[in-house]
View 1 (cartoon, rainbow, N blue to C red):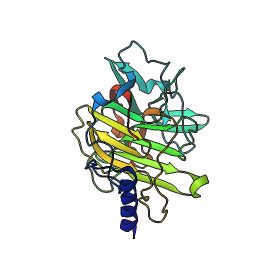
View 2 (tube, rainbow, N blue to C red; view 1 turned 30 degrees about the horizontal axis):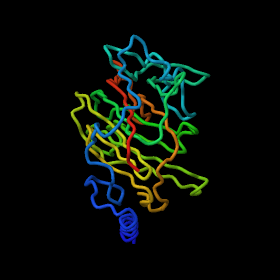
View 3 (spheres, rainbow, N blue to C red; view 1 turned 180 degrees about the horizontal axis):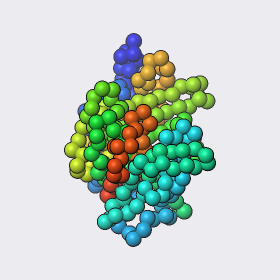
View 4 (cartoon, helix red, strand yellow; view 1 turned 90 degrees about the horizontal axis):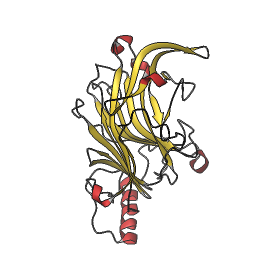
Length: 294
C-alpha cells in the first residue's frame, strides 16, 4: 500500500509540474528535483567564512562557554575547545573533568553557532563546510557535527533539526567502521500530535585523513545532503515517514535557520583513554549560497 501511495504522490507531482527530467540519487520516495552534483556557477554566494583573520569573527559566531544545551547533556561546551590555527577553525573534545552548578562533566567539547553580534540566518539555499575529521579508535565516543536549528525557535531536541554532517563509529550497531551521515529530524506536536521523524541518510565511509565537503541544498519542497559536491540523499515533501508506526509525512521547513559546528561526546562509549590528547575537527570554510530552485 505504501508503494502505491508514493507512486500516486509522484505521479501527481509529474502531472502538476510537467517535469521531464529528474536526478538519479537516492530519496525518500519521489524522484529528486535537485542535481546529482552541485554546480557552483549557478548559485550566488551569500556567506563566506574562511577563518583567516587573527581572531574569531564574533560578529558572525557565538561560542558556547560553560554551555549544556539540555539537562541530559553529557559533555560541557567550553570556550577553550574553539580556536583558530593556521587559517583553520579547530574544534576539540577532551577528557577534562569540570564541575558547573554542582554537576560534574567528565568531558568538554567545542560549540559555535552563527548567532554572533549580527549573526547569520537563512531560508533555502546551499550551505557547505570543508572539514577534516579526526581518526577514531574502535567504539570511539567522538561525535563532531555540522548542523542547523530554526532561528525563531531553538527548542532542542524537539522542533526541527537539520544534520548536514555527523561523524560516528558507534552509530551503526556492531560495525566498527567510521562513517559520516546526514539526518533530518522533524517534530511538530501541534500539527501531528506526538509525531516525530528521525530520518537518517545512508552511511558513507571516506578517507578521513583528508578534507571533505559537506553540504545541504534546501528548497521549498526538498532537502538534499551532499558529500564532496555529490548528492547522497534527498528528503522530499509529503513522502511518508521512515517510521510506519508514526505515519506522518515529511514536511520541509519554511523558516530561517542558523548554522552550528560542534564536537560532542557520546556517553555510552566514552572512555578517558580515548582522549589522551584532545580530538580535533578542522574547518577550512563555511559558505552559504542563494539558489533558484523551488
